[in-house]
Image 1: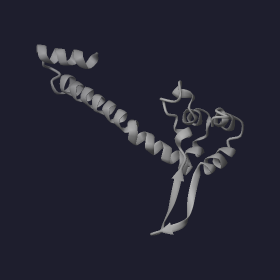
Image 2 (image 1 turned 135 degrees about the horizontal axis):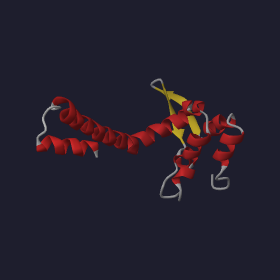
Image 3 (image 1 turned 120 degrees about the horizontal axis):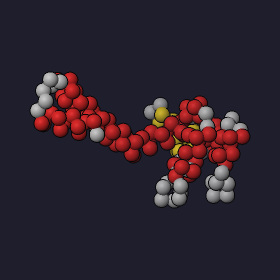
Length: 133
């Protein structure tokens, strides 16, 4: 990735079939089986796209796969693991915070416009204005 920083962009746009081979090379499977499970090491550092190391995170390898890749690529265990890591690190918090905000707006709108639709008191008018803004 240091010598060829555009390898993901090139593979996604020119030959998407080779992305599976590249992603298979970024995984290591142990030959031993412990309790019916095989140890797998994922080499995700370059694919992750650390914002501290990359100036423009929209040019990170993961962003390029998202932008130029096919949906089938995300069935690969490497990208699946990478998406889970990003989801648990910051995606879930962002999603839930936005959902809580939208739920509060929905509750305020329901109270202001549906439950008390005939009431024109100052507090409900301000609630309706706050919901509309």
